Image 1: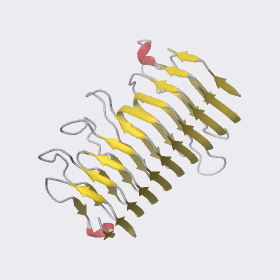
Image 2: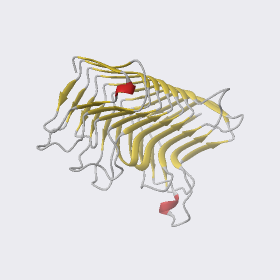
Image 3: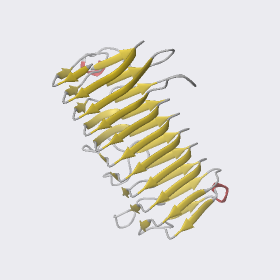
Image 4: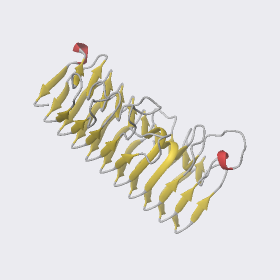
Length: 278
C-alpha cells in the first residue's frame, strides 16, 4: 500500500489509523498530515495521532516507511504525531520501520512508541512537544540518529525519554532547550529510566534544565563524545550529566562538558559510573 502526495487533515480520530490489522509493505511518503485530533472538533478528549497504529492482541504492522512528510498538530490530551502501540510481551511486535526525513511537531508527544522492536528514526526535524519529542516505553533495538530536537514556542518544550527500554542507540542528534529557566514539563533533554545497554554518542545537548542528560536505575549505558553544555551566565542547569539510583557498568568517555555553575557531573555511587576524559 502506498499513501503518497495527499493532504490529510482535521479528522477527529487520526489522520492515518490502523487498528485490528495485519499490514506489510506500507509506504507513507510526501504527505501533509495535520490537526487530526478531537481538539479541532471541540469534542471530548480521545487519544489519537496523525499516524496512529495499535497492534494490540494478535495484530501486527511491519515493513513500513514514513518519509518526507509534514506531520503537525495542536497538542491534545493523550495525543501524538506518530503513535505506535503494542501490548504483547512476545510474538510479532511493531518493527522493520523507518521514520526518515520528516517535519514532525506540535503535539503532546511527537513520536510515542510502546513495545516496539527494530525501528530507525533518522534525519527528522522534530519540534515542540508538551511532553517529549520522542518517548519510548518497553522498546528495544531502536536507532535514533541525526535528528534535530527543538521547540518553536515558549509554551512547549523538547526532549527524548526512554523508559524500561534496551539495546538502543542515540547518535549525532542535536537537542536544545530554549527556555531560560527550563521547560514547563521539568524535563531534562535526554532521560533514561530503567534502561539497559543504551549507547549515546556524538550528540549535542545545549542548555538543559535540570540536566542535559539524566539517567536513573539503568545499566550498561555508554555516553561518549558528546557535547553537553549550559551556555548561560550564570548557568541554569543543576548538573550537565546526572546518574541516580542503582546501576552497573555505566560509562562516560571523551565528552566535552561546559558549565559556569556548580559541579558538571552528579554520579551516585550505586550507579557505578566509570569516567574517562569527560
